[in-house]
Amino acid sequence: MSARIVVLSAPSGGGKTTIARAVRDRYGDRFGFSVSATTRKPRGDERDGTDYHFWTRRQFQEAVAGGTFLEHAEYAGELYGTLKSEVEKIVRSGRHVLLDIEVEGARQVREQYPPPQSVSIFILPSDPRVLLERLRQRKSESAAEIKQRLKRAKHELRQSKLFDRWIRNDDLGTAVQDVVSIADGAEGLGRQKEDIDWISNYGAGLEQQAKRFYDELQQQKG
Ligand code: ADP
Ligand code: 5GP
Image (cartoon, rainbow, N blue to C red; front, side, top):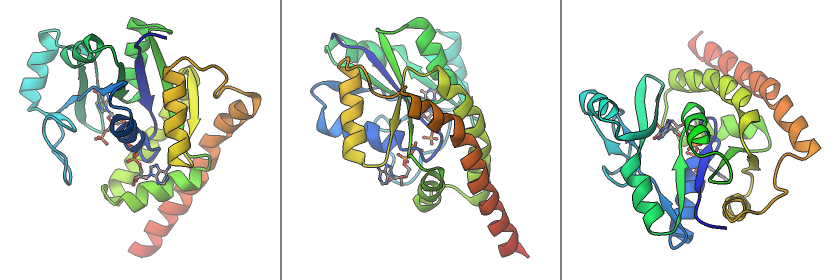
C-alpha cells in the first residue's frame, strides 16, 4: 500500500493527540505529522511550528483567501486548518500523512481524497466514563470548557458513522498498532456488529456521565 492520508478524529479526551504523538515518535520513518495552523493560544509546553503554527486571526483569514489550506474549520470559537504545504512535504517524503483534526475537517479531506487515498479513523475509549475521566484528569480545560466539549461530542459521535474505521483507545500500545495496521491497508478492524452497537449506545452513555458531572458541579457551587 502506498502512502495515504490518515485522519484521526475523536471527541475531546478520546486520545487522538496522544496516539498521533506516539505514532510520530515510534514510526517517524513511515509517518509524517502535519502541523496545523490555529488561532488559539499555545497551552502548556506547546511549541510554535511543532504542535501548531500559532497564527493571528488575520493571518489565518488571509491564508484562507489565498487557498493555502487543504481544509479548515472552527472549533470552540477558534480556527484550525491543514496547510497544503505540510501535506505535500510529507507526501514527497513517501510517508503516510497523519492529520489530527475535528470531524468537519475530516469530511472535507474524505471528499477531496476518497478512500483508499485517505482513511479516516474515529477514536474512543471503550467506556464513556473513561472518556470523561481522561478529559477531567488532563486538567487543560476549565469546567465550562469541558461542558462545551461534551456538548460538541454529541455532534461528533453522530458524525462517527461516516468514518472508515473505529478504534478503541483502551491500551495505548494496541491503539497505536491499530493505526499503523489500518494505514498499511489492513482490513477487518472496526465495523463489526458489536462495534456498531458500541458506537450507537455511546452517546447515551456519555450523556449519563455528563449529567453526573454537571450535578457534581452544581453541588460544589451550592
Ligand atoms: P484528545 O487529543 O483526543 O483530546 P488526548 O490525547 O489529550 O485526547 O488524551 C486525553 C487524556 O487521556 C490525556 O491526558 C492522555 O494522556 C490520556 N490518554 C490518552 N490515551 C490514553 C490511554 N490509552 N491510556 C491512558 N490514558 C490515555
Ligand atoms: P485542541 O485545541 O484541543 O488542540 O484541538 C481542538 C480540535 O481541533 C481537535 O478536535 C483537533 O483535532 C482539531 N484540529 C486541530 N488541527 C486541526 C486542523 O488543522 N483542522 C481541523 N479541521 N481541525 C483541527
